[in-house]
Image 1 (spheres, rainbow, N blue to C red):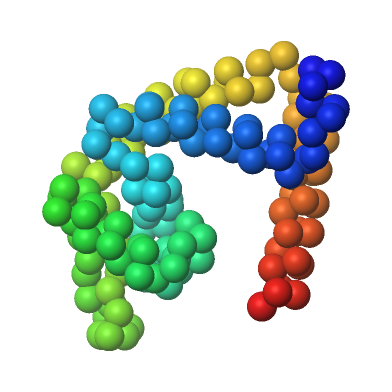
Image 2: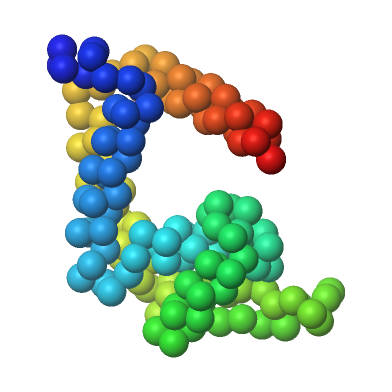
Length: 148
């Protein structure tokens, strides 16, 4: 643990994030599912009928990236685009039955393994950790606003 004390918070967050992403990619690979596709499936399952702009905001991706991801997911028959009755220029994203099955199965596996991520961390420590992460996230958001 002492080696962590010599590293910047940014570096520690990067290394942990990278490990978490690598883990997620290995967990998802048997389903022919990427991390980005997983996030889109997850948000689409929780918010039926999102338009693409709403989906972009939720997953933090640019519209062109989300379009490409949705195209691939449509080919796999996990999502379908339906004309938005309120604005025919846009479409709404819905999971298909197969998409619902995949996200249900994968989410169930992730929930089972996520308890390992916080193993040895009590509720109070987890609460503090969440609060600190939220503050760091807000600070980064402000920095991004200054750049833009």
